[in-house]
Length: 92
Image (cartoon, rainbow, N blue to C red):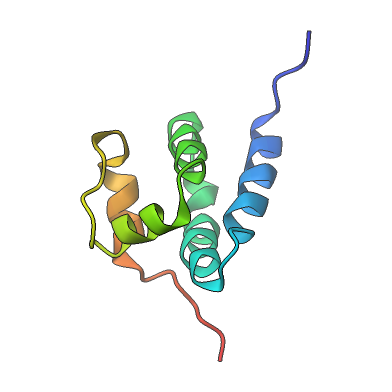
């Protein structure tokens, strides 16, 4: 039987996955969102984010930019925070 990862291990894995999406734009949006909000997350928010990370970048970005309807399972406060985009710090 394998041990379940700790919350800290899940956070570390999510941070890596959030910042290594494949495009700089997705990294800034998804990684920046993680950096801004993860400290306040509990199990429910972590589950939501891990589910989000399984989606395609183009879909996540479209939901974040409000150019595509957000699926019901992702609707709520978390995606609304992502849609604010006030956490994106693009270096010059």
